[in-house]
Structure formats: C-alpha cells, structure tokens
Image (cartoon, rainbow, N blue to C red; front, top):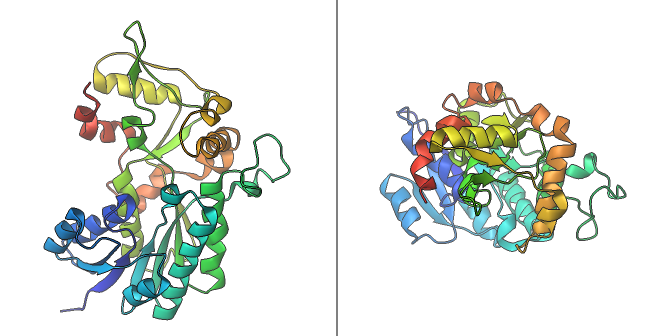
Length: 314
C-alpha cells in the first residue's frame, strides 16, 4: 500500500479545519490522512475525529514550538487563524509567522492558507470614504490576513491561497430573518443592490481538500471562494421560497452597522462597505463555476437552504 499523505489541519475541531478533516476522512480513496491540531485534545469533537481515524495532536499557534512539532513528517498543512477570538491583527500575524516557520522547518510540500484580501490595495489609508481603524487598517480582519500572504511567499513555502467569503450560515444568526410588528419576515444586509458572495461553511474545507487532491498545480494561485453571488433581494427571495412566505429585504447603511453594539462593529461595517463599493475586486473575481471544478459538491444558496431549512423554525 502507498503510504498516506498526512495533512496537518490547524483548527481541526473548528469550522473551516473541521470541514477539511471530515472531507479527508470521508474520502473513499484514502489518499490522505488527518493530523488534527487542536488546543483541546479532549474535546468531544476531537474524540469524534479520533474515533474516525484522525491523529489528534495538541498544538497552539501561541506556542510556535508545538506547531513546529505538529508539522514534522506531514505532507501538507491547512492554516487558518481565529481573528474574531481575540480581535488583534498583531496576534493574528504572529500566529501566521508561527505556521510559516513550522511549514518551512518541516519542508512541507503544500500548504493551503485561508485568507482574505488586503482592502488597503483598493482603499488606501488616506482614503476617508471609510474610517481607518487601529491606526493602519481599513478592515482589520481582512487586511491582517492579506498582508500575511507575503509571509508564505517570502519564506518559499509552497502555498495555495484560499480566499474566503461570508458564510451562508450568517443567515442563521447575524442576518437571520426576523418579524416586524406586522408579522412580516425580513432580512437586513448593508449591501444596497450589490451582489454578496456567500459559501456554505463546510465548502471551505471541502474546497481545501479539492486543492490538495489536485496536487501542486494550484501552488502560488489564489482560489476565490463563492457558492453563489446574490443580492440582498435575491437572498430574501430564496429564503421566502424555502420558508413558504414572503421575506423582505431591508438594506442597512454602513454607519448603522458600525453603530451596532457588538464587538468589531466598525470592522464589520467597513467590510460591507468594501464588499459593496469595491465589488469588482471581491465579487467580480469569485466564480462558483470555477470553484466547482475543484469542489464538485459546492453548494449554492438554495441547496444549502434545503439542508438547513429546519434550523429557521421559530
């Protein structure tokens, strides 16, 4: 038997890494094996992965030595960071450096890095159309990742850049349909009539798996994820079909988002302004038909809704 190629999966018990771990374990060809990196090797999810044959390794991006040890002997790695857990671009970039150094030391043959574009390439710091945050960012959780892309390139780590987008799952929490006083269901999105790419959370991991399956021809390339590019009105109409009643779309302004009493509201407001005003650079490069050549099971919004309809029950 050919020895399996080990993929070290950062955040294997989380959303993106978990999707990749399950995709590898579900693959009947058995070409790859999962080395699941997690800070809590005793969690229920870690135990489930172990029961399915994953190797569980305790590692923490705040502890570079643990990541270096976890990457040794692997063929490749999936790297994702957790900006929203700590809200610090500086800490996120330190995590990326730990992963890059570990990948270089282990001489990995292929890394897939979950990233986002640096919005400052299109909205310079001096551009006052949107606020500058933390002194040097427009959309910190985007810019931090986009700036970190060069760390992989400069270190000579063979990397595919997987540029993500909004999860369809956001319609189950942040943008869930709600009823007004008249009983009308509606959703709010700060997108006016501009298309917003969305993707099923599990399709991030499944697309990463497809990239590994393709071999090395996508090294150095950026794969721009989208399951479907829809306007707020189109998302509302599709929700209405699934739920069996009219769902209205009521746009928010960017300033209304920035004023929300939630952590990082200014970051989120700027993000949606970037989505909307620089659509050519975001939605314009996201082609689901191309992503489907890598991940044939890529879900569009209607397919995702059919699988999650029960979760919208009031």
